[in-house]
Image: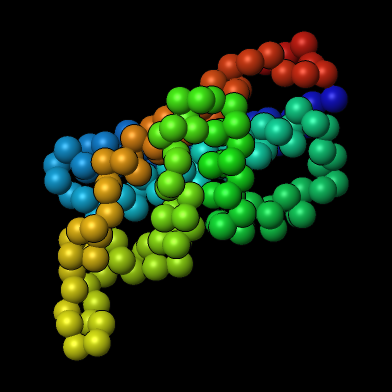
Length: 166
């Protein structure tokens, strides 16, 4: 049995993930790497949310569990762990593309906003966002975000189990 709220939320999250990835691409092409990286990471998290919600919809998670679902979705590390593991298990191409990224994605979550948005001072050194992301392969993260957003949208294109509606 399909739970409608989860399916609708999943669709909107997948669409948002796609848009975030598109905006990250625009910033990347304009060589605005810190913000491109930030939006690519946000797209990855939104794809994870969409995929989790799609799974909950298809498995019939009752709407009465909504508060627990919301709490789960606030755990950024769990979302990243889930999306990397699940997507890689569903697609050999994604498995190759995501190999090695999971630890980087999780490691950057806590400092992501500060590293990509603000100039800071660390042990007497003043660092710009460009300097803080200089060692991060932004193009790799952007490609992964685009692929995950496409994957999330493709799951929603499949017929739903337990429902005659798509």
